[in-house]
Length: 101
Image 1 (cartoon, rainbow, N blue to C red):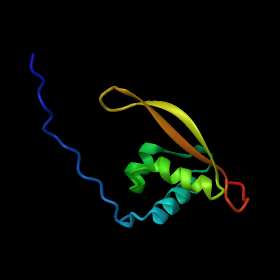
Image 2: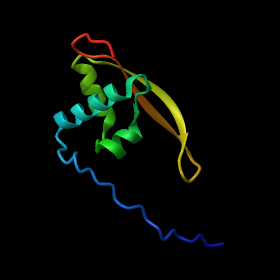
Image 3: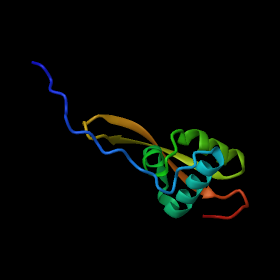
Image 4: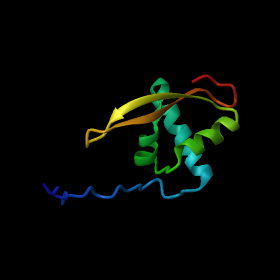
């Protein structure tokens, strides 16, 4: 039995406010999202899809190196095709300047 290829394609995502892909700007977007999320954090997929950060783990590492305490919580989620994927959720515990979240 031959599988039929889907003819629908998702519209490309646009990032009207996130056209700067410099490392510093990506770090700032992630930190702002972590602050806004509070204790719920953000996932790797959210960082890619919503913040235009293609390597979230690298930006999180850099934020940690600058003194931010960020926890990683590993979760499993199911995508639209029914496949399970391991996914990191990052939660900001405290900021580099010692401020609690």
